[in-house]
Image: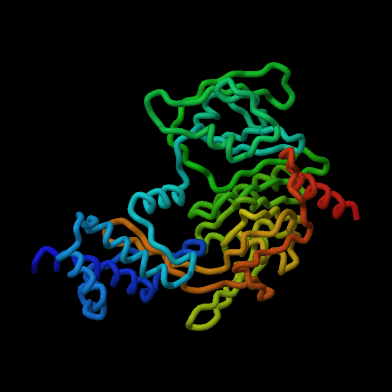
Length: 400
């Protein structure tokens, strides 16, 4: 083959990979996603002559274009993006290798930083909750410490949470870190720490006992990973041992994760029965919870917002439809379709919509989301009014 014919073959093979990906089945579900590798031998069997116009354009560019042509990979990526763009589906798209690797890192739950969860309390202050074995906890930061300054800059009560979170993350190495001044909720003397950034393994579930009478348990489920069911079971067990009589499950900002693990999460609160319905070209399938969960016997409130999406919406919708608990917050994101993720031969990846799901009441999620039972307007000063309402709702229910 001449050089330009070899180049054209690579572009056509790339398109063939994109076409074939939608025809391959897999068993590893990822919250709206299925992950699968690529068998490069399969593409060689495709009839590339079906892309007649692309062949003509490639020949004409090679023969006549004044300037240098893009690299082979750029041509491949452009061809794939153009092909997928014709589908008019925002959830079917191509990701080049660096972004695909970043996506894998996010799903793996690790980053450079000090390792704390930042929460707004009802007074609008930022509270820190260090992850186990994190740089923050090793430095001495304690659960509930109030963040006063970062690198000498005062932290305003009304600042956005994501802005504060970014200040506490950074590149690992060369002594990079952050200086904090914090104060315990019951202390009068502030404490100062310089904490070096390190690789932080992010837990998917964080829990604590809310200081209320009666005592309630708070569980923040941030994402669905392989270890989420075990972490949730541990949380429920420990909170039960601490004598909690009701639970708040926080799904705000949870954009999804592993689908099977989300079913296991729902199983902790639902004693069998449907979690959701999955509908694809082959028909509809009922996905059911397992019986005997650890969170069946306590009143439950679920917090949701516009960042609650995908598998998190499945869990919230199942709990509400099965009359296991109420939803408090804002309308959820509305992602009710399933995507296959295929890792291609150069470590890029492709997402392909393959099916859609519905709640146990057959409520569609895609593009609509879930309307909460108790709608809340977020406080402008950053106070956690949703958590406050959840506590009041549980207290009222127990008083009846």
